[in-house]
Image 1 (cartoon, rainbow, N blue to C red):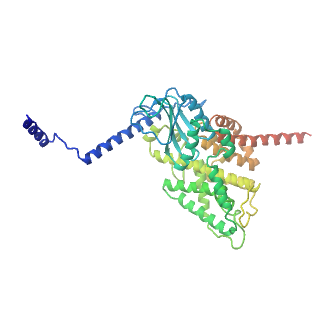
Image 2 (cartoon, rainbow, N blue to C red):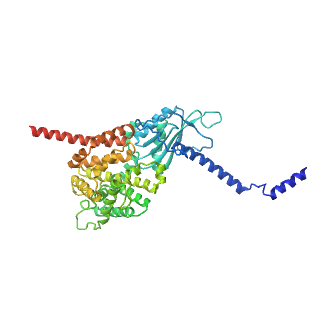
Length: 483
């Protein structure tokens, strides 16, 4: 009997029926199991986002209320590796979801909720995409968690450092340890407030720096940003716009650099922002004109140069249609560049608006910025020359962007910031915005901000304050004329 078995085994081995599992094959088997686990996780996330094969993408978000009320919570699947950014909470899922939605509103995170399977797609103002999931634990003996809820937060795209800043607040809110009023009081609604203050302190430590050297450094930095913007690669253009965002922020670069960069963005020239001494920096301003044209083109035409314009209809198409069309990734990047260009203009307008009132905490550098062009003249030139470049009115574009607050609250927030700066500096801008129906659009956007986006609410209130100020001045003027 034993001889027959040996003979049969030899025959199977000869025909390839018997395989020997060596160490290499065992490693391959382990790799296959890991791939299966990752495939399971990807399958659950795709279902959460409505991307299952053969089914159209569905939007489960309640656009009117935009509240998160999950109907069912799924159990954590077997072989599903939870992210490290997750927390277990012994509470019901509705209470956890309520705390999370309020935290996201205070943090000004755009959330698209899925009530069917208790998930949410999140996008921050820094263009960091995250995925939030609620899982139910069974509490069966032998399992890791008792009965309760697991909150899992995953980074999908964007800066990992910014993600961790947000994740701390979001996971604390899930556990009931986030105080919204304390957060507003300590940071003013800005997650990066503490790090910005550190940057300001470091800038103020650089005392005695000659103004000419600082201006020369600012010009070089702007020229580097121009070089990146003019490249044909999307990542280079993104870096160029991100550089301009930093250069137009006085809290991160200093008031002199921010003022020069703001003049370049708004006027296409550094004249009026640099010193008039004989040893002042000599530079070619043609790159500055190209920077202004590029930023305006991205904001108003959603393109760079002679590229194909991204129309409003294309931008709002479903993902399946985008993949069937051409260059979906380019369209996605162009939307990102559009957002960054809005941020650059918003920063530049704020710098020009505030320079007249003076810096509340001036830097102790050797010299203070000299007297410059009035903010009203700058904003008027920006609106008039911008219309000549793009054949579109910047106020109309900003009001139109603000009207999309429900779908794109981050862009709407930046648009409201631009509007408040423009109308605050120019009487003509206030009158024209009123003619374009800004009051009704701002009122609708304010409702969206009150429900879902704290920063949008703040910026819309500033616009309302400026518009109300204009109406009050007009009423007082009529009364004076009657008297």
